[in-house]
Image (cartoon, rainbow, N blue to C red):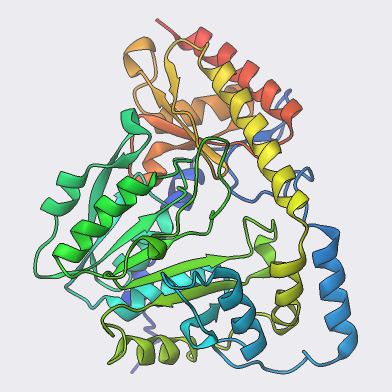
Length: 407
């Protein structure tokens, strides 16, 4: 070679973050007269009003003082950590778990990465929700797996369009991914709806990846049902982690729960999961040491306080945005988000959700993610974790913004 000619790999060229591609175009004015309010970040800790319980911090400190967790742990997690998770999530008779049914990962996103990797080959397709968390699409496309979106229906609390879902299935479909409770929708599926999804999976002999990172973060009148608790027929890889329920996304502990049925995972998938978990060394060893205390000894009042604050903020958002002509909120049932529809016909100089978000941050210094981040145009997603005072101020600014741009 006579000159340097170094090219990026094809995989790196396929790698992308749809949210970043859009958000980078939403410029925040550093000289803005109004304070910046972000309603875009799905990290509940950034505002200081949601904090991990002190008992979890104390559990970490105790493990540090033992000097037993400074080395490399097993890539798929220590036996004690996997046992703590199995005991927490095992449902006797229906969906029992042992430590051998649990793998730890670097956060729930790491768990999702392993699940997509173990079930999908290039040229196959995966069924994903629309709107849905953008990571799902990114994980599939980087592996040359075709993405097929099944629609969620906002008029029906974002339940799945079951006929549409089933119409997407063919002999190259590898699996179905279901997110419940939902990011970005804040929906929580009733038992009967989950059973209907499971019936489709059973009919076509398709495994399910169940993203249940927001498990139990549900509001009054709603109930979270683990998908594995509703079937003895469909094989399920359920993913979760500490990030949301325990309010510690930076601790990077996620897990995969292997709910095998008919020994469908026994021949290859279990080995594949273990192999993939060993490519990169596993999650933080100190946090693994503290898992038993965190999972089993965090006071119930901590979870109740978290949900109470989220419920209050959700009601605040519904009450405020429902009064803004041109915007229609879909009432969240859980998680930390609310989707808001935009009636473009009501506005004289706004033609898309991206333009709505661009002008909103430019004029009012309030940042919301446009629905296109989730493959669902004409909506915005609002994160409801900021303090109530910040939310009230943001909603007032949004109302003023809409009034200025309304026809």
